[in-house]
Length: 232
Image 1 (cartoon, helix red, strand yellow):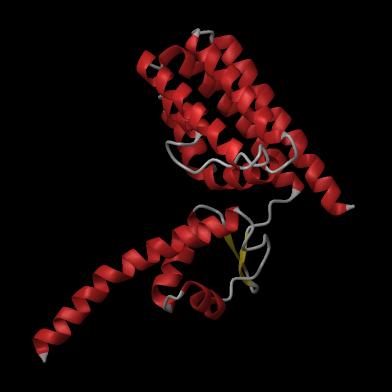
Image 2 (cartoon, rainbow, N blue to C red; image 1 turned 135 degrees about the horizontal axis):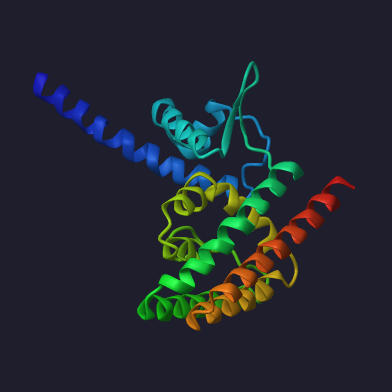
């Protein structure tokens, strides 16, 4: 009996972090794509049922989501999905414009020829993905397949990396999900990405930064329009 109990406990110890991580990924995706609405209350019993998980791993997943700011804990009101109000989103886009502009400048200086070729191939993949949605959606998955993530990594600047690919990354993805669904935005964004990549390939640091700043600024104008329409 002792041996059996020990085996079960060991399995639980290994299973719980795996379940927590899977649930973290699922909830994160649902928050970013709007399946879990902004501002909605986190009810553990409902989420445990929805994701088929016990309370322990679920709470670990929620704590992880709090650390990346997708869930906020409000005193005396419990936890809720973050709400990206106009002020917060404007602050994020202002930070993005500066940080990503500098990242593009540094990428033009530092990217290897192999990395630049890989970036071009990545955009070809994005073009194919956009075609599959008839040009309606440009929503990049996170990590190395994300154009903006790739540029931030290429900057080789730890502070930029920590902000763009760490602290702000998932909030930025929420913002981009909204702007990426705006009519005609997908093809416009892809064209702008290609222009930025071309400036990087020519090692034109100033143009790469200007184009990236213009790209981010344009995305903010779209998000602002969406927010204004929602509030009418």
